[in-house]
Amino acid sequence: MKQMSYKEVAEQRDEMDLRIIDVREPDEYEEVHVEGVELFPLSKFEAGERPEDDGRPVAIICRSGARSAKACQILETEGWDGECINVEGGTLAAIDVGEDEVVRDDTAPDV
Image (cartoon, rainbow, N blue to C red):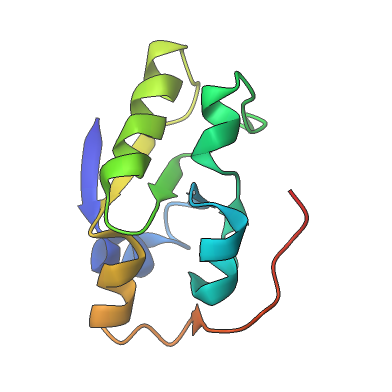
């Protein structure tokens, strides 16, 4: 599994046409998240559901990197077409680097 820091993901997001999936639960996402990421909780992975595979490389993010690593392992084991990248440090790393796209609000997408 490929590992990238949040800073690398942010810098290469457009160039790589990266799709970013947050695997935290909705209540965690509501507290703080990176703008423009898809919410697809790890609990759905564990229940056998998968996000649609559009062939693009996907960066998986969570709070600190453990759940995202697990989600990447699941996708890679099942033959995910696109590259799967684990975001080291997760959302906490985005906060630490002062990412402008970190959103702190009470709005969460339906899952």
